[in-house]
Image 1 (cartoon, rainbow, N blue to C red):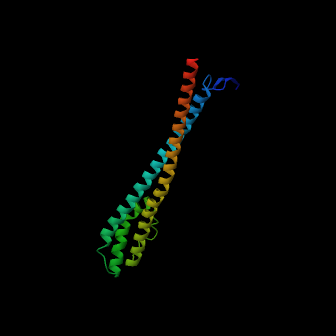
Image 2 (cartoon, rainbow, N blue to C red):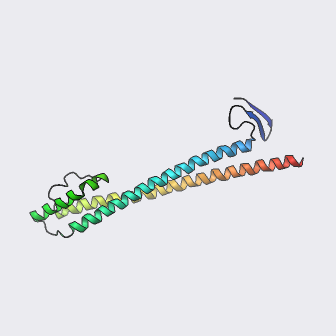
Image 3 (cartoon, helix red, strand yellow):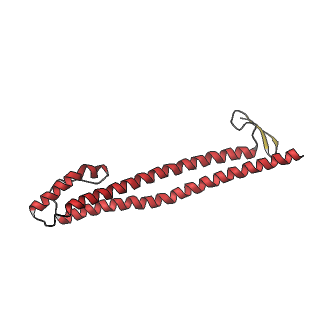
Amino acid sequence: MTIAVGSTSNVNAIKGTEFEGMSIQMMAAMVMLEVGATKKKEAENKIAEMKGQNDRAKALNNLLDRMNGELGSITKDEDSDKASRAVILTKYMNEAKGLGVDVAGWNSPKSAEQIRAISSTIQHMAENCNSDNQTQMVKLQDFMGQYNSFVSGASDQIKNANQILQGLAKN
């Protein structure tokens, strides 16, 4: 690659690249737009990740609501009640496992205290998803700020190039 400088605002050639014959301002604008596009893509990926976390939190809360709806009617800790709880947990076991819940031992009889511990674990997982989304939102705002900065910088470079061209045209 060879670079020949023709004036303070123009590079005659960066042979073999897409910048060949462009002014320095236009090259800078092109680079800034490319970096801006990368930041935009990173922001879009972060949004998709956050949507996945939101969906998971909703699914965990939905699972918990349905389980509690069925388990709420069983108030005693007699053997038949414990067995009934195990039947209900077994019904939701595959769905819970798919959401990342540790379901080891769900198919055995459970006391009311054990059921509260399982419910608490699921609720904690959903809250963690929401908490993680708050952290991800800060990162998303950073990516969007960087994107805006690079696009603004590109716009400034294009404006500078146009001013130079207008100045040259007047002379």
